[in-house]
Length: 66
Image (cartoon, rainbow, N blue to C red; front, side, top):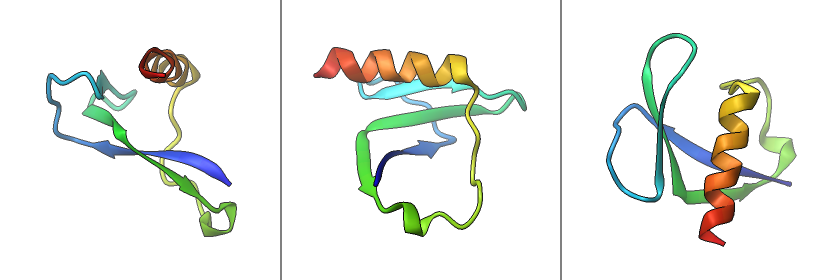
């Protein structure tokens, strides 16, 4: 099992949106309010690989909610 966070290309200025620009230059939002628990068996391929620096920033934002 792992926690998954939905990504969107629409950026909004809400507390539960983490807005950033990915390495390809596209504006992306991680929607923290839509975090889901998912089975590892559902993974067949890499859908998106997030840079470690951004991943750590999202973790800090999630911790601030808890």
